[in-house]
Length: 231
Image (tube, rainbow, N blue to C red; front, side):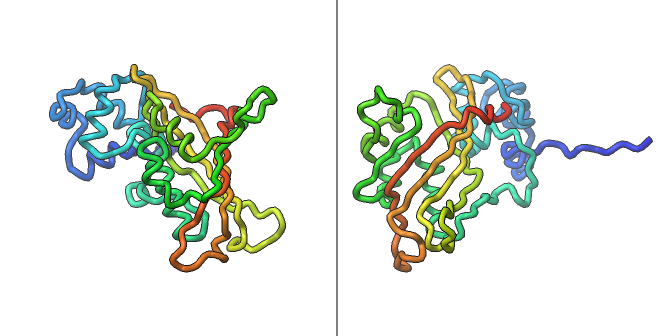
């Protein structure tokens, strides 16, 4: 009888440990944390963990919360790859900026990508009893930056919506999928998928070489019908 061995799970935290030639037990002693906490995180097993412990690990390793809570098997040589499908370096840089800064210092870091008549909305704002259906960029930033939870986004994919057969460089609608990790003040961790629809002022083919993309419309939803990512 033959058996097939399964590849062990390699998390970003485990890759960090391997790169430094140290163990999870060593890191626990170094940070004065319970060994069980670091060991389970390194294995990709997450549950209710004290926020103070998460913050200490994040600050020491420079990994973000999404990486610390990653439960996906990774190959060391491809751990830093991003699944960009936008086909333009300027769009990729814009998406990286959104991924990094959306819930932290949003206004300053993302202002360069925002059009003059930008509006933000979501499916909850479409109900008949909602009066303010759209937010300005300043209002969106104020909500994001005052959230008491710690949120981290990880880009899954980005693709152009080509509704009329145009070439990609003439499309202005971009569909982006994320995983958002939320850690509340008590250390409870939740994950959800987020879909983001962006309408740009100009298609990349109509932009000058030194011109940045500008977002005109920002619409998002959490697709609950897909269920939640595994913890």
